[in-house]
Image (cartoon, rainbow over all chains, first blue to last red; front, side):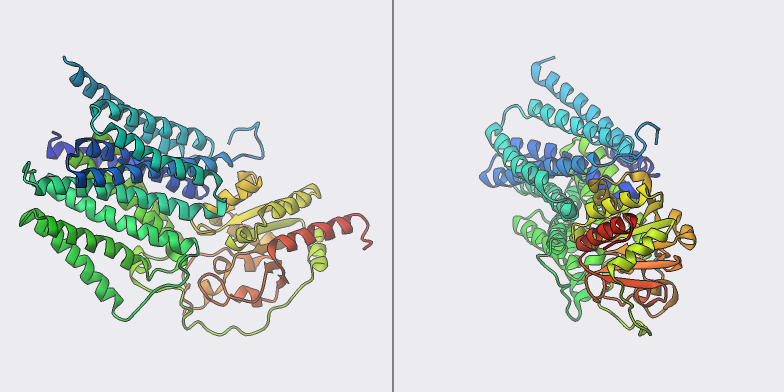
Length: 98
Length: 468
């Protein structure tokens, strides 16, 4: 069991991390970044898998099953579209850095 | 240590690794040089976390889990692979809605378990299960409506008298139902009513929002899904969900603010006021002056510095490849060519950059609004293709205009402006554009692709000695 205050600390630190790591993102990457972060919350799949594994009644299984499908869709779809978008970025000066 | 305990340790260590990979991945995705590595890294984290989860579920309902993953992954993967770049924003909306739905489903499952009386949850767990389910449900139905609007399946804004009041009442009812579950009675029918209200609110709050504001809304729902995942992660006691969800929630909220700022519209305005209905802007005097492709080509031939301002209309006409071809011809002729992008060009910030990148335009030719605006004064020819509201000087001069105050590209400062446009209609926000009536503006009425094609051939003709 994660203690309530410990969870609060995790929450606070993760929130600052989230804001800091994208602090200097150029406008050209806003859409891919939104798509990428959309992929990352696809981790909800893991929670849905655990919920389905613990399900006993048919109704609980049905709800867990839907959760797994939706979570897997979020993760897979989010990855594919982000990767496709990022594949296209290239510089006109490939030799120089930047 | 028995095998099961060891597996749990392995899984927990894997979640830790996944959380680190997610944070590094998002960090890398915020620079064009490392972005590609970033998504791959986050992807590895996701695979590790998913595989580790099989270890701790002990094989319960294994076939269902595997089938569920297959049903979720295969169609979205195939669809995501082949969908056009112009349709990316609605795909993001749809996948985001799925994530919100998944979080809501977890919440529903947990609440159902609690109502059966098998275990009494601590107050914090129960409250977070309810809040996560509320946010997840709103994000799911809201994202689906956003997807339908962007995909052109639902063109009109849907408004009626007293809408704000109705929306508020539905939201308040959902909150009251949620509070009743937490503090009063864990009852199945109450849980059902709670979910119906939350799902309905997601639809109701998105219906009246116009297409022009959709980017901000999708970004907001993205952040909300992150939060819902974090809350349900606490309920499920899985640290990876708490960390990844919170990081996305914070990053998404920050990104939403950046976008709203770029449009000069407070988020409260986006959500609670109507936009894009025309409004009482001042009539514009003068007329639009047309130009032929051959004359436009001569203007380009004589210019030293050319700035191209693309908008979503260019992408709709699939003209980005031709525009890049035209730019290459101009660059070859020794001209200084730059692309100017408004922060909200396209359907999402950065969307236009993706579309240009797809056509092969290197990102170092592409300039942000703040960098390019001072340069318009020294620009010989500015070509506006498919952009409208983001170049409308009324945003600076006409206080009665609905877009007054929105930062714009100062295209009107260029010596000559060529606007490529199919007809005389207004833009996405339904507002007349003062730029089109300016003295230094000439209108090239044509489909974007066709116009670019003509400009290329006329330019070649001029360079080849003018005979045609």
